Length: 263
Length: 263
Image (cartoon, rainbow over all chains, first blue to last red; front, side, top):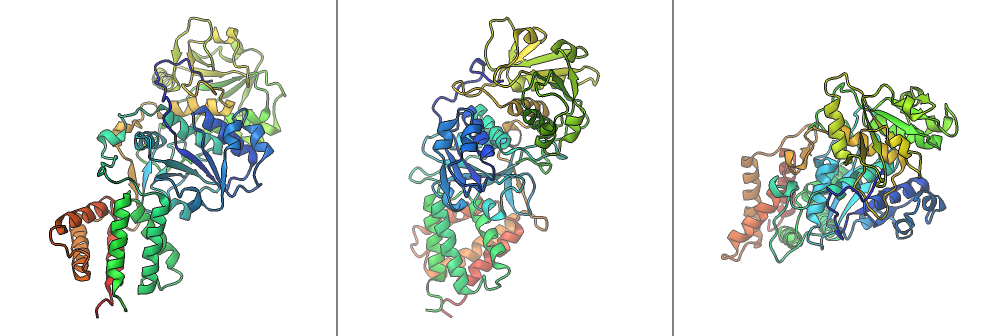
């Protein structure tokens, strides 16, 4: 089922789509099926974080059923942080609520938000998918701006990986430009002209700067608590959808506050 | 990705769903994956017309990944006409325009129409899916009330069978459930259990605390710029939709960073 013949749905033209990031995918076949689902939805940029069975994969190419270009163009990364470093907005897909404070979107809302966010042709967004059955780790979620949960059968909610990719791609493809939640729901960020959203590499440097100072000041001195505290702090700052200018302001604040301490 | 945890979407309760009819499916694995996609979308009634590799199928059960009940309950028919005999409304999925006069719907329209049609609890509807790669025959289409075509990439429009089933099931599941992007804007915030959103008084004390320390550290020393800088900083923190717990964390950070400075 498919078809270019459904005339009431406007074609998205050459609108760029989000990057699809598969974190520690296990079976090459699933990667290939995800690539096929991507191309069904006009998505072409695939990234893989530590694919278990290595890369390239003949199974992936076979399962892609013609979406060879997506598979061949896939880039492989060692860490999720590296895979999202150049992205300015990252969404995490998850099957269950975590005990973390995060914005939660349906695929339809996420599709509209991504479409809106990328509308100017410069901003880059991505969507993370966890490994089969296990999903994303909390440390991966901490890199993300919002969580996407599909409102499917609560008694049988685990989607096949390609299915989850399709669900997001399909909603992105169908999202109406200019009529999404950003327009009237207060979701879109109006931004001072001279700045742009901070990318993940800039955020990461901010976090590392803050954590270094917090280590020095003793705030993070309880070893067992440190990972959770660091994740919570990153999570909270991440949620502010900081601009590049604001990241510089925050780093100035940290430097200023910590500046003379102990010197 | 999925989840019973997205509470803003009302459950469809016991609303009956359409029957899924796979016509001459080839691989047992695809039947199983379709069954899984069905149950993801609360659909449970599966019918098969002349499955090529026979029935029952171990491959189908394995690929169903837990949706065993759907596979075990599948009924097998010799002809499409037999498989739809008791249905009052039948939809055909197809990847391409046929030279036939038929009503064409998108999956979203079809989902809404099926939901509407079955609302009284008596009417039975079904959706036909053709065999992999080949699709439905014109004789099958002639049994149907409308044709469903997904508005996907016209240059790569062939969906995996389970994907096509999911697409219809998902749209049926979401039909009229208020998941439109306009409904609740930018999503909701999932929150760690033991906390609540910070109130404005708590935020104000946070801001004043930070500004006092930034005055002391010299960060805000340029008098003419101070009001704009203060506003920008408040703005940015405000945007994070902080919880009460996070406000306390931030105040701890400020105290810690500024702690020993100058003392």
